Amino acid sequence: MAKETAAERLDVTPHEGTHDHAGHHLCMPEESRKRAARRLAIARGHLESIRRSLEDPDVYCVDVLRQLKAVQGALDGAASVVLRGHLEAHVATAATRGDEKELVDELMEVFKYT
Amino acid sequence: MAKETAAERLDVTPHEGTHDHAGHHLCMPEESRKRAARRLAIARGHLESIRRSLEDPDVYCVDVLRQLKAVQGALDGAASVVLRGHLEAHVATAATRGDEKELVDELMEVFKYT
Amino acid sequence: MAKETAAERLDVTPHEGTHDHAGHHLCMPEESRKRAARRLAIARGHLESIRRSLEDPDVYCVDVLRQLKAVQGALDGAASVVLRGHLEAHVATAATRGDEKELVDELMEVFKYT
Amino acid sequence: MAKETAAERLDVTPHEGTHDHAGHHLCMPEESRKRAARRLAIARGHLESIRRSLEDPDVYCVDVLRQLKAVQGALDGAASVVLRGHLEAHVATAATRGDEKELVDELMEVFKYT
Image (tube, rainbow over all chains, first blue to last red):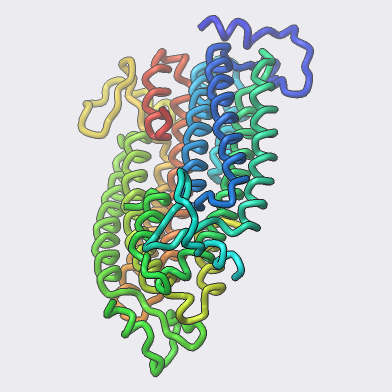
């Protein structure tokens, strides 16, 4: 996985948004990043069209609920792209770096599990 | 509920997005419509900032997942505004119009319940 | 809807589990009650078989997660039966009794919407 | 993690419910297994009491929905115990065994992500 080489650069200057686990800098696999960005651009367009539809006094509640559900599905799809990249590039390799506990804890928090 | 008066205009020309149930035209209570629109404008801004963050090769997967979860929460909030308006203005009054079956069916479909 | 006649008996002695809204006693349509009970009996059996599978030291995590997901789906199905009965028998008729606000508030709370 | 020793026994006779990934036998960490079993026993009792409550013609729909929501929360809790054990014992160590792809694929399927 070529992404790992990038993810494990140790000489990176940490800044807001970077993550260092046990001295390793983890960043998102490039392909996940680009695919997720494309999906979010589409979801944003859909969301904007729903917002505009709310300017019409004749808009029907259930149509809005259906459209919102479709956008939620699109965001789930984008999140799944990010999650898969994270599991492959970072979680599955955690034992080789020694940051298992940190990665599992932060993932469980995202899943809202206790 | 003044919204009902608007919702029950019978002389409206049906077009895409309008809904006629048992001869009544139902539209969204104005306050729900405006509150939902404001929430969607905020969610759209948040979504755009997540999309931009994906241009940074150092962005961390879990930060993106957290931000996406926050936007999903905002969309849930917008949907709840729309749903409450719908329950109050249309579902709770269905027996007075006679379109109970249609309203319950379409709502159950939105809830993805069988 | 014959259930409504039962639901609106005013002479019932209130006890734990009964609900009186604006002086009306609302109870669950009998068919929903029986269908939901059957689904719960099946879900309980499934849950018990998952619990027993956890006595086997060779059980695999992902198999347990898949089984739990199936039970969750069965409970969603039971909840949908109850929700549909409630919408038809109580929410859609709320304006005829005058307890719209109470019914919508308690339903929104169940949906965890704000 | 002592569980790993058990999880990686190679001499186990495969049977229904066991999982072999790249020649390794993965089983559930014992502590997760016992904690999940206890939670499921409690959830089963709760589910049975809801089922019994449905024998009462006066049971109120929204009370049943609230109880079902509580059981769903308990099952989410049990699933989180299993998931955490799986992430720690199997996913975080996948790169050391070489079964990353298989583990990530089956996990993404459980999450219902595409």
